Image: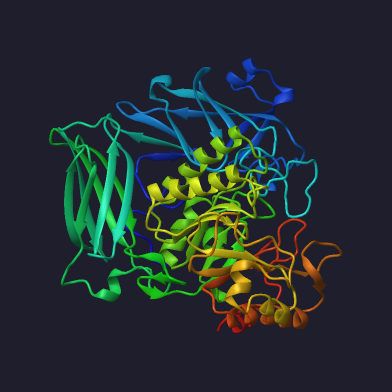
Length: 577
C-alpha cells in the first residue's frame, strides 16, 4: 500500500498533518455522573479507568456497560511545551462536551460526529496538568444520533447508544501564527487546483506557501498573502513530465498529489504541514453519473461502521483499511457510509486505495426548530471537515424522511431539506447532493430509491419503466419518490438500498429483510437474482445492504467479526454486469 508523503500512522487528521503532536488515547480515569462529584472530577479523582477512545458501552473500553448514563467524566494528565501553543483536539464526543484544565473551564461543544478543538495554552503550567472532560447525552431522538437507540434496548435497526468520547483525543503544538483551515478544490476544466487557506492571525507580513509534488517530483509552487481578503490561489498543474493517466484520481488508479504547506512571518518559518489531493471530477450529467467525464456505474455497499468489540469506534487503523479491502474483493467500488460520520482515516484509506464514499448526516428522529438548527450546524461542519478527500463523491442530508417525517406534505420540512441542499452547494458545488435518500425527495441531484423486495423478478418489474421509477409503482407500497412540489427532472436514478437478506445459518435469531436463507447456495442464488435485477434496469447504480451484521441485524455479507458468510469470490462473480 502506497502512502502519501505526509502520512503518519494513527494521526487523526490526515488532510492536515503536523509532526509535533501527542496521541492522548489510552488509559484515562473515568466515572459515571451518579458516582462522582464535580470537585473530585476536576481534581482528577475518578473511581474507574477507561480505554479512550472507546465508549463505556463497548468491550474495548474495559467497562462494557450497555445501560444508559446521562453524564460521564474523564480525566488525563497532559504536558505543555515551552514557546509552543497547545491545541487540544477531539475527533468526536457525544453529545454535550465541557473541557477543563487544572480545574478551570476551557470551553464546550455540542454535537456528536465532528471534530472540535480548544487552544489550552493559557491553562497549562510547567510539568503535569490535569485535563478533565464531562460529557452529557440525554438520548433524546431530537439529537443527531444516526443508528444509536434512544430506548433502553436495541430494536429494529437501531443499536446500542454511544456516550461520551468515541474518537481520538490528541494534542498538537504550534507557533504563535499557524494554519487553521485548508480547502483544496481540483478542477479538470483547466487541470488546476485552488487552495483556500486561513491562519489564526492574518496579516500582510504573513505568507502561505504551497509546494506540490507528484510521485516524488516537484510539480508547482505558489504562495498567497495571508492578509489578502480572498485567501485563495489557483495553481496550474500542466506539466510535460506528467501523463494524462497519472494525473487523474480514479478507482482503478488512485493517483494523489502531495502538498507541503509552509507559513512564513516576516521571512521566518512559523508553521509547516503536509496534505494531499486527487485531481478528479465526480458529477451528474443528465441521467448519468460521471467520474472524470466518463460514465461511472456506482456499485456500492451500505456500511454502518460498527464493530462488535468497539461499536462506532474502529478497533484500529488497520481495521479501516481491511473493510475497504474486503468490499473491493466482493466487487464493490464504494460505500454509502450510513448514518455515521466515519473516522477520517477511513477516508484516507479510501483515497489511497481507490474507493468512493457517500458521506451522510447521522439523522435525528424528531422535528422542531431547535432540532433543525442543530442538524444544520452539524451537517455544515461535516461537509467542511471531509471536503478535501477525493474519495468522498456524494453528500446525503436526510435518510428515509428521518427527522422530517412529514416531508411529503409539509412545506417547512421539504424547505429544510432543500435549504440544506443549497447550503451544501454553497460550500461544495462540485459534488452531487441528495436531500432525502430513499423516497420523498426535495431538491436532489440523484433520485435514490429503497426497496427490500426479496424476489429478483418482482424487483425488476417494479422499476422497469421510467414512469415506475419516477412516479411510484402500484406494485409496491413504498412512499412516493418526490415530496409535493417536486418532480423528476432527468437526474440519475439509483436503488440506494436493497437486498438486506437475513442469513441465519449461524444464529438462532436475528433480524433482516424477507424470509431468511439457511445455506450458502440459497443465499448466493438470492443475491445473484437481486443484483442481476438491478443491473438489468437502466439506472446509474445501486447500494446493497449491507457489508456486515450489526448486533441484532444478520443481513450482512460478512459476519460482525468480518469473517465471510460465503466465499468472497462467489459474491464477486455475481456482482458484475
